[in-house]
Amino acid sequence: MSASAAAAKKKWSPFDIGAFIVLGLLAVITFFPFYNVLIVSVAKFEAISKSDFYILPLSFDLTAYKLLLEDTKFWTSFLNSVIVTAAGVAFSMAISVAGAYALSKRGMPGRNAMLSLILFTMFFNGGLIPFYLIVKDLGLVNNLLVMIVPAGLNTFYLIIMKNYFGGIPESLEESAKLDGANDLYILYKIILPISAPFMATFALFYAVERWNEWWYALIFISDASKAPLQIYLRETLITSNSMLSLMAQTLAEQRQSAKVYAPALQMAAIVVSSLPIIAVYPFLQKHFDKGIMVGSIKG
Image (cartoon, rainbow, N blue to C red; front, side, top):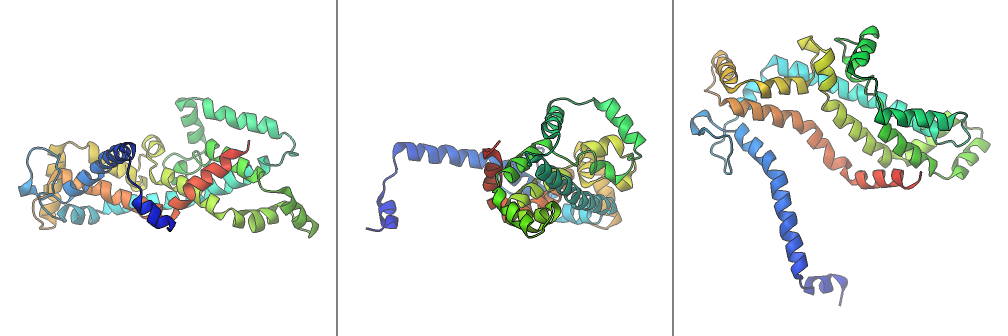
């Protein structure tokens, strides 16, 4: 009897059934908020009751998406987020990889002192006011770089990368040095190519952080033309329904569109702002477990 046939004949135990039910309920509970956001975003004004909580879609109307995509402020903030994400990932990966590779060398002078100082930053910081003064003195206020440079390095990611590089056999580098290669050549021509899945995992982590960046923008960005998408989304979500209804109706009248349900505009903004990251996740998800586990085994 083949293994597949034996597995097909295996009966489910009460524990298996219970685990399936519990995990299924957890999956439904996790997925439902996203489902609710989606069906509200396509709701028609006339089909909506006073509640924003729905199980079945009451209508299908893309007016909210049309108004959102016709808003120039949306596209300006979207472009800002794309720039911050692309530049931020490149900058963060460059300094993280270089720092982790250097710190993985046990013979590096001052290695332990540097590691101690880096770990110190995971638990303590100077506070918001000194941080603001430093950023101001660096000329980063109302500058897109304020969302890239100060948050450029994640200490936790750096430590995992260091552990991973430390686990690569030294014989690989020694053989390359015998052929005349220096450390920089070894890193970018040998180490990184064999670490591509591992690097892809952390590139995605950094991309999610930069795409969702709003705190630095909220504090340091006052120019609306430089605000990222998350600030646009925040303003849309915290706007009262009465004000948002007036804004939606004004936009609809300007574009000769039908009446718009205000929460539909809010939910449409959430859906559109989430799509880029959701689209990338399936291609890199297979690397997550391997990347984290490989980097966390060795100390």
